[in-house]
Image (tube, rainbow, N blue to C red; front, top):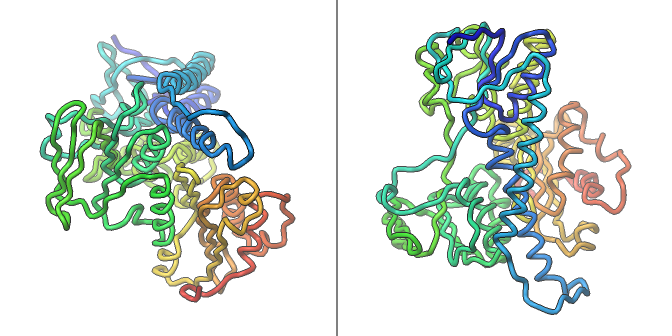
Length: 461
């Protein structure tokens, strides 16, 4: 059976439904193809469920600290993992249902279920149906990398997806990978009550961050009672269900850790290997990411790629921005570009790390006249009042142009406060725009101007 559409969106993640709606409203006949769960990673196995679990873990931690605030609850904190799971699933499923209802109500848009594979640059197959169209928009996302460690085929392990299906608390969770997913799950399950060991092959956690940021995060995790190992090379997996372990044979000294559960959090890969891209002539790089230009166009006319599968960003917000760029170029005759995007993201441990723009090390490598301002969260009134004073603020400015180059806020509400800097960066306004603004008291953001008023040359602090 053949079906004809004007446009086809493959993948109903963050970018797909929004673009489908715009395409449908433009008068195009649109198909959205989803092989699994509408909503993509964010709704089903990423942002929404993980941050729901982070909220449960934060609540458990604050309950343990209740007496510091004069609140007495008269007993030990007990975690009901079944209830945590139910709450997490409920919120995720409601969000997915909302996206499904939204798609169902879109004019000129049809949702098709199944796995899509190209048969030519203008046709793809979904089961027994061959779909023809002039425009294809790929939003197929990514999945966890499973490294080829010795023992990976026989030793039971979890990825981020399986972690969210745990309904009993692990006695001892081993996390391989000290980046964003690994650190979030590690702290989360430590606060639920598990013993946690995090193993990282690099010589420091989060090596793309400035060293003092990495060091402060290590201190935060260790304060929570998490065991950390660095420099874990030549990893081998051992054991069986309930008794798993890793051996890092090249570590100095040789490293061996035993536990009950194992999480592999060593990166992600794009879901492009089963799309039949070769039959469409679409080029990918050595990692499988679809190669695109500054407007998300592939090398094949009429085919675009958005979100995690194009390697230009690994976040929900960059995926959504890809949609905005595609819609602007295809529908609005507005030449928006990926290269106009300022790098920004957050690590949602507690307290969170929020990042925008360049690190200090990156700014120095690029030759800027770097000026840096730093303020500990212990000197932020709002953090003191809340009893959450771990971390610091750091802002980076070009001394010649007075432009903001970047920022890191590791501290309570940092993931919200950083946006006043990010917006100023997009406006290309001088940093004095922030220092001259009147901010609400008492907030975390009100101390950003003070931090900017104490700039010093890089290395002078």
